[in-house]
Amino acid sequence: MPNSGYTYVCPFDELEDGVPRRFEVDGVPFALVHAEEEVFAIRDVCSHSAVALSEGEVDGCTIECWLHASRFDLRTGKPLDPPARIAVPVYPVRIEDAAVYVRLVPESGR
Ligand code: FES
Image (cartoon, rainbow, N blue to C red; front, side, top):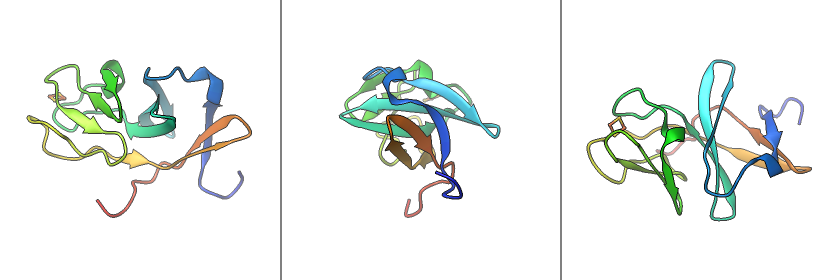
């Protein structure tokens, strides 16, 4: 996918359903999450304190921070519970030829 802004991350079949996986590209840590028949990419840093969201639990389209239990919507990055109040950046994902690509630019409109 040259010049599209998308970066190859991993083969699709390396992602287990409901199990977050941490990656880092160009110094940006992010988690890929295969859930609800989709793949989501979310910055792997909680907006409440700097801990990895990839160590939390996935439930439907949410990931829960392991430290204080704020859940974030994987589609928007928005927190659904306190104490987190600020959205975490999410990134567009594409699946092509059984490979996962991500574009590490925050989605607009949040
Ligand atoms: S560090 Fe994630 S909710 Fe507090």
